Length: 456
Image 1 (cartoon, rainbow, N blue to C red):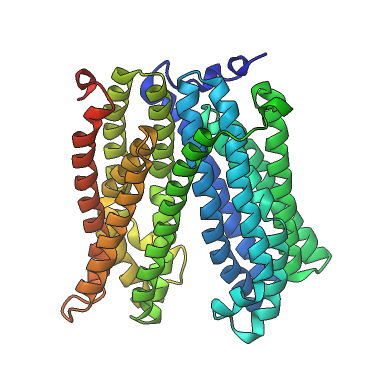
Image 2: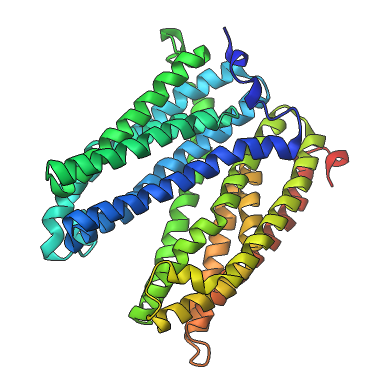
């Protein structure tokens, strides 16, 4: 039995281009939507049964976990890009080497982060400027979460591995099981056993163990090529170097994104509570609005990587063309919907009497939301450069986009006649400048990687 026995449906080098990418992307979109729904349910359960202090403790811990998880996702995303290239090239022996190298490298980094987070849990809580009244609850919650952090890595590792082979349905299924189990255990441990925030953490860890271990066992059962023997357990410097390059760069990209967002958040906070509340709500709406195009960008990346590995350059050209049209059409539709329904969307999250907050949020959504096509193209470029063995450009684009946005936000906001409006306008301007730079660089550099006859 070989890898081809179970991945014919995941081969993105054949069949309808747009249809193939959509079938691959839709399960990822559903998975993200499912995760967002869980986050809302988790907030409701903790807030309803444990009160405001517990909600604040879990909320602060969640922000930290998003940052740590982004490191794992970056590492796993880089590994997945390498697997996609090798799978497209039918280099199955190379995939075995990459499996060993990636497990040693990314697994080792995860264990180091896990150990450090447990050792420095008290300094971390102090660094987050946690109020004294919730310090104990936050410590109890984080202690359990940190103990189970490796299961989070395990799920993401095998999820990106399967997606690299074109299989996005199985990771969705295991995520669905995890989300449902997490909600059930939240209710049992919090409402029935009265374990408080510790119960919420235990529920999260158990559900992550089930999804991580379950997905690992499924992968080893269905894909015998990933069952390593002692003869495969050897260090291959070239393989480790390739995995390290991709993983470190994608990890850096994820970290830079979070850092840039934190800097903008600090500027927003300086304008007072109403602006803070409006920004917090509008960002949630943003997440739902452009989440599908982000997932499509990841699907596009896997598509390009497999075809780049298979040297199907004409198919790459058509894939880029079709994706441009799809992202343009989708983003314009979403922008129109957000512009028209900005006020009702804000009122889903806050009472209609909060007119100032709603007005600020509506302005943000109508400025920034009108240009979703800009971030759609950016997600596409991130995926494109990862797929054609230029992951460093994804980092450069991220730094360029966020750097421009932060500089413009601080510069424009300091002008009294512009103020907070400058923060809103800095976002689409940053996207546009990064898009122009990214496409220019692609046209300039692609000739070295793809035969000229295949370029559009």
